[in-house]
Amino acid sequence: MPGEIQGAWFKAIIGSMTAASSRFPNHQRTINTMRDDQWYAWDDYVHMLEELHAALGDRAVEAIAQRSAMRTLPLARTMGFDSVEKVFGDFGALLRALVRGLPETEHARTVAFMPLAAEVESHSRLPASLLLGTFRGFLMGFGKIVTEAKVTSRHGVHRFSLKWM
Image (cartoon, rainbow, N blue to C red):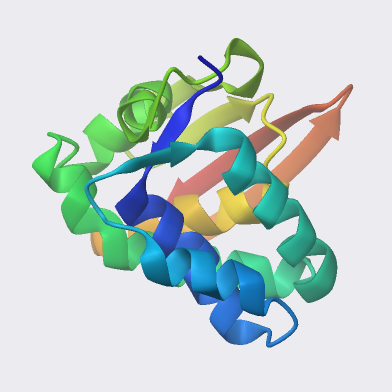
């Protein structure tokens, strides 16, 4: 199975992006028919994100992802990810909870975690700006202030270095 993402998460991200751009009415219609508790094709999610990212750019995608992560944090909390330590101590566990059957090529993993910092590495096709916004949104949802966020890319791997207080 190529992977499926939970509807609530799919809708939060893609729905926010289609609302920001009127150029994708078909995507908006698709989002409007989705149910929060259903599972949808990971490849469809990635394809829509690629189109929307190309249209909106990095800054808009990061901002939308940040807001969406803050809004969907209650979903993560119900899955047991109810602290910064649980989210960033093993970010891959959260991703696997939101995407069942996540393709091995799409993984993200925590490289290092300390009380006020984390490094996460991603091999995903998802835009780096989407992941960075998601990380920021989760931190802000836990009342943290992000003091530093860096992304370095090498050979298709993105490494996110985050610090907060």
